[in-house]
Length: 219
Image (cartoon, rainbow, N blue to C red):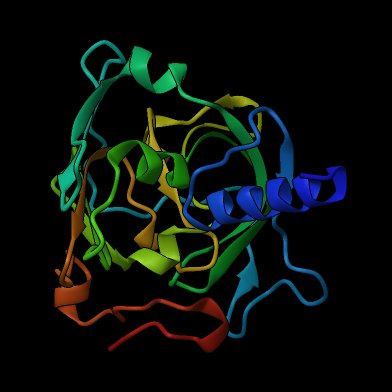
């Protein structure tokens, strides 16, 4: 095989792996801030990072933290804190939009790509949804396509510091293209499903899709 064809095949293989969630650029800072008008309709820019939750801030010591990943997968697993930190670590900058109309810009995150979770779990072909459960008994849900994106992370660091407890430390989900209630704090369990399962706010009248640019707040 001649050299140009080898390069072409290698490039196609790299593209295919990315589409399947099989590649991570470890240590490279990505920037996923929208260009142009970054503030979704109905939002205002907040000072600092407001705290909104169910009123419970669980304390999870790193040596007690576990992440369980299971469901319609061929390789269910449980990670300890040490396991989590041993995974490829990525850096990302993105904006954050709360359904209660405030947003924050330029958040610098460090953590593990959700695509790496997908790769490690080896999803079955019938997976279409993801369900998240947390240490404060919260839950939320997303379609798989919303999670299969390079800016979706499980983060342990915010702006160079350990993720604060009140914001979901030691580990939370970040899903920049959805309202922030879809990014579960104090993440404990990830379940890959072949059918949708609504979470805490979704069964209480919040939108199931939560798209900030559509002001998609309530069902």
